[in-house]
Image 1 (cartoon, rainbow, N blue to C red):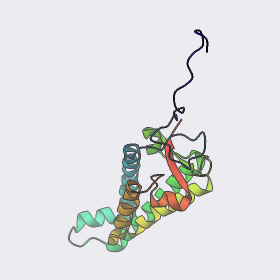
Image 2: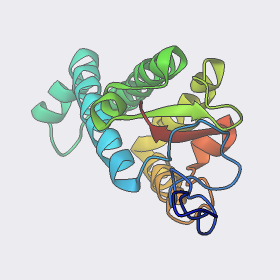
Image 3: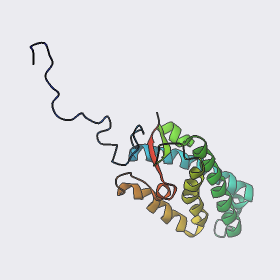
Image 4: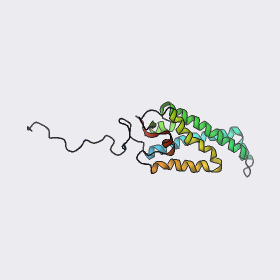
Length: 179
């Protein structure tokens, strides 16, 4: 080695995604989204869900029924509102994910849904993911929808290595940073 040559490199090269790129993520895929990014995206999409819910309550007469008789609202109208709400939300989420992997909340949070196998936009699997997430909400009036959502959303907390929720597992997707 001459005095003008640089010394040999020390150790192995470092990965550009040291902590957020687990084994099994395809080469070139963006790093996994953080729990905070996912929470922000879901919070924003839940606000959209709230608008849809309010419009459904008003359009079915359930809102007026609850205001007219708070002690005995029309349960049938409330159930119809839940069905309408979650079908509309399913269409919103499914169409957005199938198109480019991002709902409005995900766009704002800088994340997207990607196929685990290749990092591509989910296309048809976006509809599968949306169905597993949104349609249990139809059971919201009896509390089952809320329990499923809670378990589904918390699943990423202990899932290794991809931090998937149940709707991700069914659709074979992951949530990554948008580039």
